[in-house]
Image (cartoon, rainbow, N blue to C red; front, top):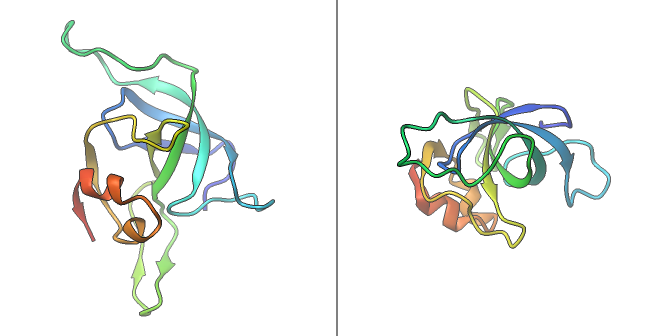
Length: 128
């Protein structure tokens, strides 16, 4: 469960390293988000630049949208199999719901494909 003020790890190559959740969007008054939900995040730390080759798409303290892709909380699917991850992670998106990065460096749950995030699942190195 992701609430406001939760620190989240960024798993794509958009340029951010750590973000803080500001608001949970489109949940109808619920104060927490789970896998596949959209949150509003503020950038806390950036990835280091390696020379001038890397061009960052963002600056510190900018506000972006993100999709929760991993949570530490155990999620039990309809088959009765539980699934949890080692960290709370997010993939950054544009306000038009397009991915901000081009690669995702984490294992994503297959549940994202059924929750209209098939583009994120295709960019990941593995889905389970």
